[in-house]
Length: 214
Image (cartoon, rainbow, N blue to C red; front, side, top):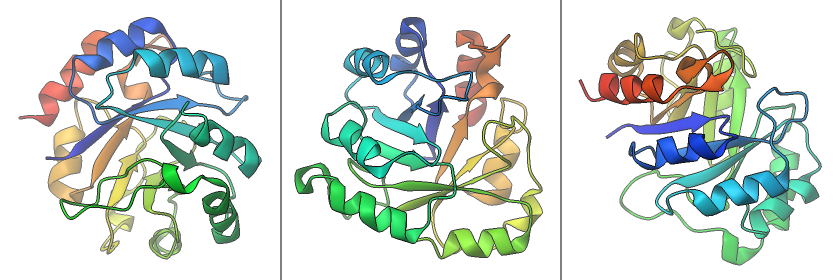
């Protein structure tokens, strides 16, 4: 079954909505320039409301690795997702900072992202971007059209990535079926596609999940 991440959650009603929808990942954005930004204290409150079965993902853009590790080690998030220019050296440093008890080895049941692992996002505008993503030392990669752009990129660029990936960028209930059939991603990551006037819309969340199951 394909995994689903709803990103940019920032209100109590957002959490109440996702808890009953069977999603796998909930994203909290810590990039201050984003309209979906939440501070660590708000994220902690939302995480405490979140169904324990849902993995809390923190989205960062060129943040100090010590600050990112602090949120993982403090239990505010389970998994960091990097959306800036972070390279393999940054990823290695972040791994050093995350406490051993917060890093869980992958099991034999599949490539699920688990506590303390690292997701690295890549903006895809060429085949070279896909090759660069495939070589990343991150535990999982995310292919996107751009940070929060809400636009679909040219999916024909993906080709054979050779490893599981999150697909993001312009996803909604209308194209989710096509994305699954054509690309077979590990997970779908949606934000603007489940919003109305800049805020999460429960009806759109429900429609997205219904389209996923068709």
